[in-house]
Amino acid sequence: MRRIVLFLMVFLLLGGCSANDDWVHTFTGESDNWIVVMEIRPIENEHTTVVYPFYLTKKMDSEVTKLYYQAHLVNGKPSGNIEHIDFEEFNQKQPVLLFREYPNLLSPDFPAKDTPNEQLEYYFSELKMDIKWTDDRGEHQEQIPLKLQKVP
Image (spheres, helix red, strand yellow):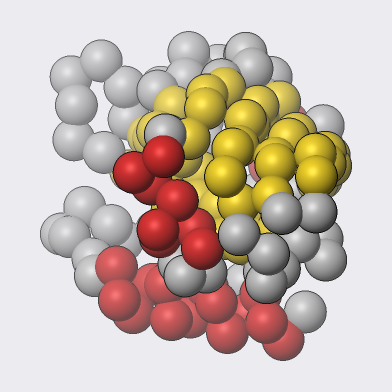
C-alpha cells in the first residue's frame, strides 16, 4: 500500500498540473507483477468534460516482450497491444500511459470535482484491468480490480 501512495505522489509531482487540473479521482490496483492507475481528470473539450487515462507500471524483474491489456469500464472495454518500442519504458519499471478514454458520460456533471466517493465507488465498482503478457518465464495473465483512493 505504501508503494501505491508513493507512486501516486511521485507521479502527480512529476506529471505537473495545468490550470484545469484542480481535481482528480484516482483508482488503483496492484498485483505482484503490475500497478494499474486510472484517473478521472477534467479536460477542456467541447464534447466531453473529463478523460480517463490509464497507466501501467511493471513491478517484476523479468523482461516483458509482449503485452495485451483490456480495461473493463461501464461504457466499454478499451484494449490494445503494446508495441516493441514501448517495452523499454515498461522494462525500466516506468509508468506507461496505455490510453485515454473519452467516455459517454451519464450527464455533463458526472463525474466531477464534487462527486461523492460513494457515487464513484458504485459507478466504478466493476472496474478492472485484464493483462496478458509474455516474458522470459512464459505466458501469463491477470485480472486486477481497481478501487477508489480516498483523499482524507
